[in-house]
Length: 140
Image (cartoon, rainbow, N blue to C red):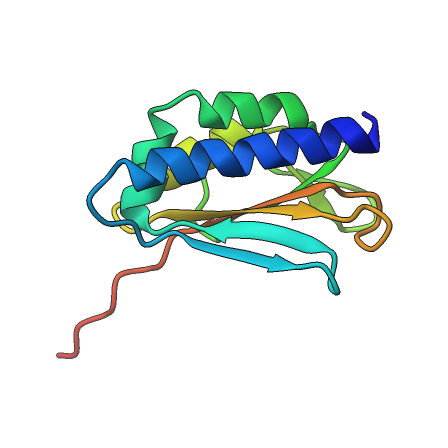
């Protein structure tokens, strides 16, 4: 993937998400851009994660966030498969859409997507971070 294609693709993805989120009455999406740290991203709340999970956006993300250039940060409660390497590290054969849709199915699941400078992030161009907060425990 060329840098030009990555930049254009990232711009289109941000535009599509911003347009889709702007169509609703209120959005809790938090867009962040930090060129000094080499990333741009969006933090989605549960409503936005679930709403966008039912659009082509997760499938489109699969086309540019391939396993060889993406880092998936899964929630501790994720049911997606993990593979442990001999060195103790883990990876998942899941796709970005799998991670997104699993977060959307959880009551408080949310997702963040970051476009990264691969020169600063060990060759990774994307990070898809899944968060599924555990419900607060009730005291007895």
